[in-house]
Amino acid sequence: MIKKTPNPIDVFVGSRVRLRRLMVGMSQEALADRLGVTFQQVQKYEKGTNRISASRLQAIAEVFRVPPSFFFQDEDSAMPAAGAGHETGDVSTFVSSKEGLDLNRAFLKIEDASVRKSIIALATALSKASAAAEAGERADKAPELRV
Image 1 (cartoon, one colour):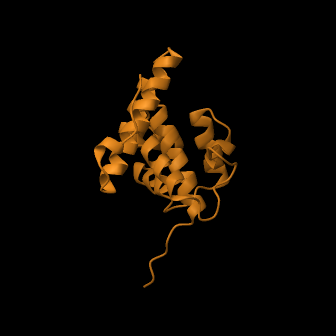
Image 2 (cartoon, one colour; image 1 turned 90 degrees about the vertical axis):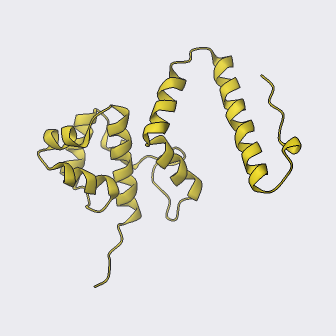
């Protein structure tokens, strides 16, 4: 028996459902109750294993108070490109993780723009230093962090 792989658009839409659910702090069980389905069905929607019908997508949009188009939007385009870049997937995966959501919520609470820029500079410097270390370069070639 051939294992069927989910359509990349179904996976993308499902990941956007998961992202929005986590952003509003809702459990899979709570979303399932609001939609009249099981939490396992919500899991399948979020993984892209089961396609979300238009009427179900509309119901999900109403629960989250977003337009249905929200589930098709990417940061850079209105639709996920066929064979979209690996980095976009990494960002989406991270942002929808608990760690990513916690980091984003904390970052949004920082009102001082200069502090936010310093945090971005710190993260950039740390990532470059980490990449340099992985590439076998010396640590003294890593970018200097100025705060």
